Amino acid sequence: MNYYISMFIDNELGLDEKIEFVKSVHEDKEVYEESLELLEQEKLLTSEVLTIAPAFALKEKKNWFSFLSIKPLMYASVGAMAVIMVLLMFPVQKNSVSLLPHRFVIYRPDVSKVEISGSFTDWEVLPLSRIGSSGYWQIELNVPQGEHRYTYIVGGEERVADPTILTREQDDFGGENSILFVGA
Image 1 (cartoon, rainbow, N blue to C red):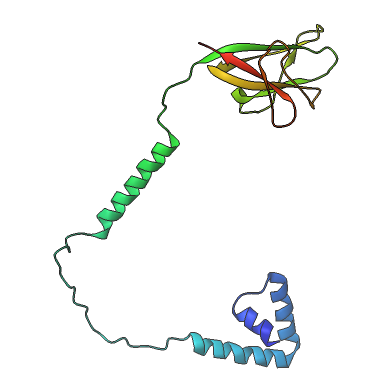
Image 2: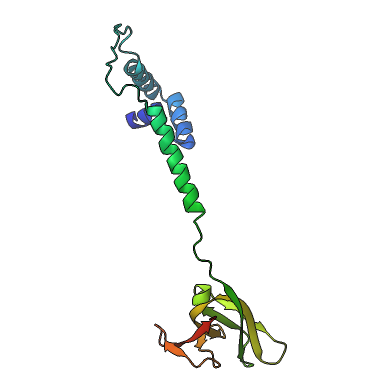
């Protein structure tokens, strides 16, 4: 029971535990007296030990850099951190890469879904749109100038190289990526 009394005094019991503790104190005279005794001890332990503090003054030692204060240094460091955070949030844009529109088209009348994934989408998968009932699928994307690798994902799982692009390479998964050259 000492454990629960201590937990109660230190306010470390949950509400349900406090209710049970109060009930036991109310019902059991021995628990009641023990609780009062421990509370009196707690009162003594937490009372002020030193009632009168000796009076003395600290002498401030002057030195050649005493004109410096912590506050200006603190403000300067906070300001420097703010400047760094702004620079990190809004990076200086270097050479802007021009984007050129490119239309990707594939003929697959036998599937209900075609997607594309490539270096120009950071390998994010994007859905193509069906062109009527012709069997053709398309998407138009703004692609940065340069060399790009991509693949079509047919029916949700089959990876297919673009049949209109002859330049290809093996990917890391046993398939092929098409290599597209955009721009000058």
